[in-house]
Length: 363
Image (cartoon, rainbow, N blue to C red; front, side, top):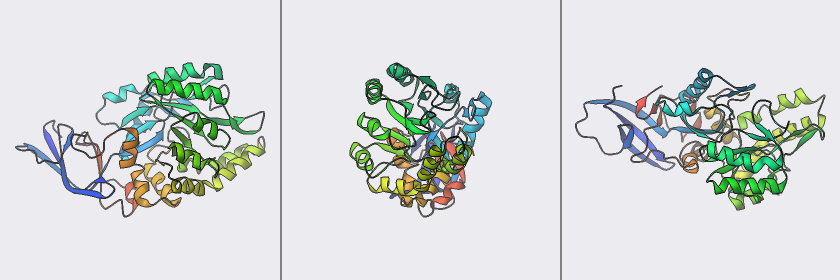
């Protein structure tokens, strides 16, 4: 596709959950709804178009052992791209992936810097492992390195207790979150269990990843404060295997993980019913492969979230939450085209007909 080619997308352009238009053009990489005069070359794509999907929790440049080489990170990003995920919130990575910003064929990445964890309380080679008196300084460092987000590890297995426990005292997270907000960054935290949630939310956190520990006591607090969750249900599906692997050494932890797994759908549905914002994230890049965005949307529907709302959690609503445009006049021409209406059946997301970045068909 030459630089001066115009892309014409026609069919149904889903500019919002209830709003569709008949066609759009991408000229110079930007969307317009006005037919461009005198275009020398026009490529036409037909179907149902959505803004590029959002995976709001993935890890580009990371695998189960730690940072990966650039060629592996590239393959991860390409896999997400070909699945239609064109906006990735990288929720913690030790790799420097800034070079991706210069590639016009890869998804856009919103980085949260490197995970910040308590000493010996997270996966080896992933995080800055520090003590509470260092938390403010490290949050400030990662706020400056990231793209408006910082990622904490809120709870993890405590080998002395034999179960999940909070990683940080209340006063430490209050000071750290205040510092992030002072620097213009939002804060999110990995949390599986129940006990870390109230302190983090009352300290002003913006989002919780996984959130399997939500209960009838904390759900109203999340709703009142407007704290979002990214449930990563395709990752929570691995809890039974994790529990089995740790049962001999940590039986209490294993039983806890099974309970969290068994109530996962009820937890997500209760959060949604209470008005807590829910967004799509896969947790790809650790133990999970990339390219699972469609599977996660389907999991939200299985949990009881209405299909249109589950779709918004990876499309219009997710982009608005992350401060990135959708299919609007002048926005980057990043979109995915499907053979049929994904609002009618979210399983359509698993089979993109065309993937477009900056007006160029890349898959």
